[in-house]
Image (cartoon, rainbow, N blue to C red; front, top):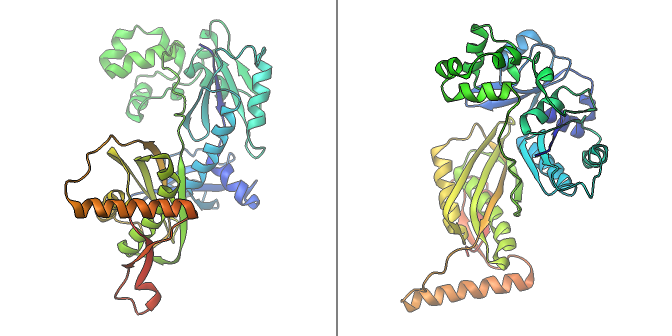
Length: 392
C-alpha cells in the first residue's frame, strides 16, 4: 500500500484569513465553545506554547494581546469538503481524516502519475493558494502523516525502505493516543519513539492495556489501519439568517422546517429520504451549537424529521439568542415498500399529497403553504405567524 498524506497547517485560521485578509500576519486565536468553557481551536503560528483544546483563559495568560476569533465550524466544513471534492478528481481514494488532514490512496495510479512528483503536483493544484501544503508519502497512513508533519513548509517528504532511522528521534507526542497515556509515557521517561520501540511489547501492554500494543507498533512504523475513502453520496447543506435573533424554540423549529422543505424538493424526485443529518445553530455571540440525528428508516416526509428536531431543541438548550440556522444532510436512502392504508379517507389524503408534490415538481418550487404560529404572544404582528410549505 502506498499512501499520500496532505496536511494544511492551521486550517481553521487560514479559513478565517480567506474571509478576512487583515488577519494575515497578526497574532490571533480561534476559539470554540464546549458547554460553558471556551477552548482554543487554532492559533497563529507565531504563538508559542499553545495547543488545540487548551482553555482559552490559559492561552490568554500567555498571549493576552492576541485577537480572538470565534470558530465558524460550518464554514470550515464547507471549505474542507470543497477541497476533498477537488482531490477526488486526482484520485478516487480520498479519506478526509479531519479538517486539514487527508489521505490519498496511490495504488493503481501509476499509468496516470508515473512518478511521485506528478501526483504531488496534481495534489497541489487542487489546494487553494491561501493554504500552505505539506505532503508526505509512505507505505502506511501513520508514516505518511509523520512524513508530511516533518516536511519543510510548503514541501514534501517521501519515506522509502526502513523508516527506523527517521522514527527514532521523533517525540512520543506524535502518537495518536489519549492524553492520559501521553502523560504516563512522560512519567516513565519515554519521550521518543525510539525509546518505545526498544521495549518489548509485554510491559507496554501491562501498563497501557490494548493501547500499549498499538503504540508499540506505531513506534516501530507498523500501521495496518485501512484507508476509508469518502462515501460517494450527495451531501446537502442549507442555512439561513434570521431577521432578528430569537430564543423561541418554535421560531427555530419553523425555520428548520423551511430548510427541510428545500431539501425534500431536491430529494423527492429521486425517491430518496433522509437517513442522517446534522442540525446546527449560531447565536448572536457566535456560539456554535449542533446535534446529529439518525433515522432507522429513511425519513420520506418533513413531519417525521421535524418531530425529532423539536425534541432535540427541547433536550439541548441553545447557548444564546439564535441568529443563524442550518442543516447538513449526511446520508440519503430509499425507503422499503409499505402497504397502503385500508381506510379510504387516509388513502385520499395520501393521493392529494402526491398530487401536490407532482404539481410543485412541475412548477419548480413550493406552491401550497399553511399558516403556523411562531410567537403568538409577540407585539409585532409579522412575528406571530408565518407561512410554511405544506408537509409532504
